Length: 582
Image (cartoon, rainbow, N blue to C red):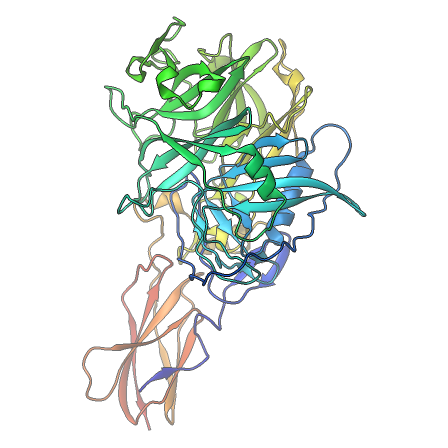
C-alpha cells in the first residue's frame, strides 16, 4: 500500500500568509472569506461540534488603545478593532463587514455585523475557524478604566454554538438565521441593515438572501428586536458562548410591477422627532449595480408594526398612503443618482443628506447628496465629496481593494463631528483562486472617517475629513503575476488553473519522490499512482508544495499523475511520469 510521507502534504507545508503589520508563518490550512453584499465570493468550512460544557469565566483583558481628548478619533476606532481581531479567541469576532453601532447606555455600544469571522486570529494562528463563520453577529463593547488608562472589553454574541471555553471547538450560528422548521434554508444569508434604539428595545433591520452563489438574490426584510438591557448584561458577562436570540418580524414581500427584487426596507433610518423614516431599496436588475430608493414613515413606537406604516407615493408630491403597493421611487424618472448597498440619510446644515460609498466597484469616494426634505429628491449635481480613500482601486498596486456600505454613525458622533464607518474588501485571488483574506485580515476590518458638520453648511468647505493611518500591507505588489481580479472571471471568480508542465520522479527502494515546477500561488496538487498490474489510478497524496514522497511501494513499474487544483476544486489535466521501484 502506498503512503505519503511528511513531504508535500497540506498540513506540513502551510502557505506563507501575512497579518496586519506582521509577517508570519501559519500552520494548517486556512479557509478565507471574501464577504459582503457586493462581493462575489464566499467560502467557509463547517467547524467541529463540541460536547456541552459549563460556561467558562471571561479571561479577556481590556483592549487598551490611547484615546485622544476631544472629538471622535478615527485612528482610535480603527485600532480598537485591529487589537480585538489580533487577540480574538474561539468565541470572538475576528473580522467582518456590514458594521454599524447602536448605543445601549453611556458606557456600552452594540456593534452589528454581517459576514463575520470567528477567531482565534492571532499572530501565530491566522483564522482558525474553530467556531466557524456566521452571516451576522453582534459585538457588545464596554468602556472601562484600568490602572493603565481607559480601554474596552468586547463580547461577541452569536445565535449559539460558539465555543464555551478556551480552545474548545464550536459551530456558531448567526444571530438572525432561517427558522429551524424551514428545510433547505440552512445557508440562507441575513445581512444587517440600519437600526435604532426605541425605548429599551434595539430594532434592527436585516435583508434575507437565498442560499445560492453570486449574484445573491434578496427575497425580503426581517426586523429583529433585542432588549437593550439583555445586550448590556451580556456585554458584562462571560466572553464564551454569549447568545442573542432576537424576536423576528418578517415583512410582507412586494416586488414593483417593473420587476426585479422586492423592496428591501431598513437600508437606512432617519428619526425626526417621534417619526422614523424608513428607506428602502429595490433593484430592477440584480446584475446591475445600484438601487432605486423608496421611503416609508411611522411613529417610532410602531416601527415594528408594518400595518402602521405609510408609504411615499410620488417624487415631488410629498403624499403618503398605507400599503406598500402604493410606494413610488423617491428619485424622479431619469435621475442619475444610483443608490448603493448600505447608506445613510442625516439632517445637517438645514438640509437632508444621503451619504454613501459609490456603487461603482473600485471607486474610492464617499459622497453626500442634498435634499430639502426627507423624501428628496436628492440632487446628484450638488453632491459633496466627503472622503476619498487612497488605498482603494482596481489595480495590483491597490491589492484590488474595494469599499462599500458607508454609513453615518450617529451614536459615535458629536454636535460638531460626524463619524462614518465603511467596509473594505479585496477582489484579489491568487493563481490558485485563494482570496486575499487568506493572507491578511486588513480586508475584513471596519474603517472609520470623521467629517466636521460644517462640511454640510450652505457653502462647501475644503476637504477636512480625517482617517486613521493608511499603513495596510500591500500583498499583490510583492508578486503581481500571481494575483488576479476575481471580477475578470464571471461565473467562477477564478483565473484558469495553470497547467503543470512536467513531473520528475526520483525512485529508490520502497519509495519515490515526485517533484514538479511550481504552477502558481495557492495551488494544491493531487497525486495519483497506478501500480504494477493496476488500471486507472489511486489518489495517494495532496500537496501544497512542489514535491511529495510516496512510501511503502513494492518493486515494479508505476505511473504517477499530478493534477493541479485550485481553491474551488477546479482542475487542469494531469502531468504524468513513469518510474520503476527496484
